[in-house]
Image 1 (cartoon, rainbow, N blue to C red):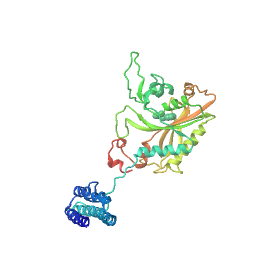
Image 2: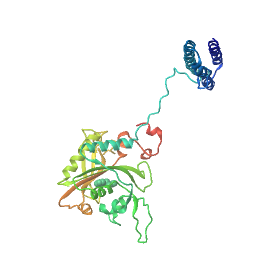
Image 3: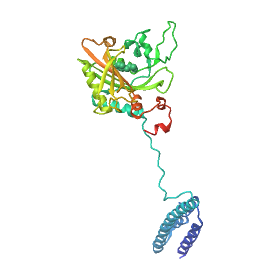
Image 4: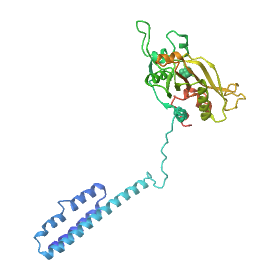
Length: 348
Ligand code: PHE
């Protein structure tokens, strides 16, 4: 029985060689040699057919056993190579599997994003749709259609970043929007009443920056237009908004203010949430904090978008977003918002 002896020898040789294997490549070579297509074992199996029947059975069974033995040895060797690699790393002091994992730094929302979302959520719950618009605007939407013609002194209320140069007529048409109000026009142009929208977004002012002025900040605009919308609707809606954002005990105050695109125009204040109206540093001892501008949409603005002011009325409002966290958290410098200093941003 030569073949039996051959198989026995093959087994001893193979296992002896496997002992010397000390890395993954070596193991793979061994596996290909002893278990691959051209392995001695396969050659034996291929020769089986020419053997007498009893011998064929015996040799067949032996070769299969050997194949299984080789396979299980490969797996064992693989495991032992892996665990000795880990031990080596441990001994070198590089890996201590008992250490707690390193925490992954958690991201968070920018304070402006959080307030914008809160504001939009409150108005969404009241049936307002959230829409956005372009930051590069035209003179028409930013001023003209909002009842602020060229050379109108009210243009001084918004120091403007112009994008194009004056043309031969001395006129410029493209600018960075100075407020979100141009979206009032864009929305009215595209839809028919009833309209209820809020528009969050960036606005730009050509100003020297200091602790209370940034050249870019966020506003949220609001617009509601329908038959029979009244100043009472404006007050009720904005009062409810203030109570939802600043707490149910807040009081609101409306005083006359001027914006060319509303009539009458108002400024809305809430009683100071630090001193509840008694007077403190936050409210400059007035007891009141101004939070937004608003008013009834000017009839001329409605005419600009071909709405009949005898049929439709509406109210609009606009508020600065950063002002809210500035008041709430006592932030002393608005430039911190977009200075990208993580020590500031991580506090929220
Ligand atoms: N757009 C005005 C501003 O930026 C705010 C405002 C909006 C006032 C809507 C009234 C109505 O100052």
